[in-house]
Length: 108
Image (cartoon, rainbow, N blue to C red; front, side, top):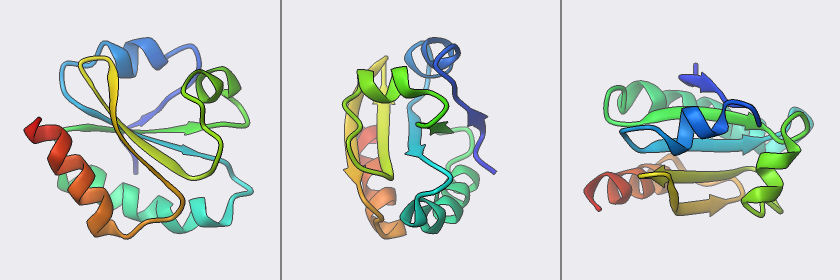
C-alpha cells in the first residue's frame, strides 16, 4: 500500500514540507493504465521505505492539486524534493523506469 493518501488539503504538509523525497502517483479509479501502475507503485513504496515517501493523489477528488502541477495525462508519477517537483513520468511505465527516476532524485 502507498504510504500516504494525499489530498488537496494535505498536499503542502505531506509533500511540500517533507524532509525526504516524495513520490506522488496522480491517478483516477477509471484509468486502466493507473490500475496497472498501482501495484508497481506499492512495490516501490516497500522497496524505498525510509528513503522516500510514496503517496497517491486521486485527481477526480483533488483537482486543485492536479491543476496546480499541470497534470494532463494519467497516470503521472512525480518526484518532489525540497518542496519542488524534480522528476516526472506520464503514462504507464516499467518498474525500472520508476526506479531510475527515484534513484536520480535521491542522488540529486
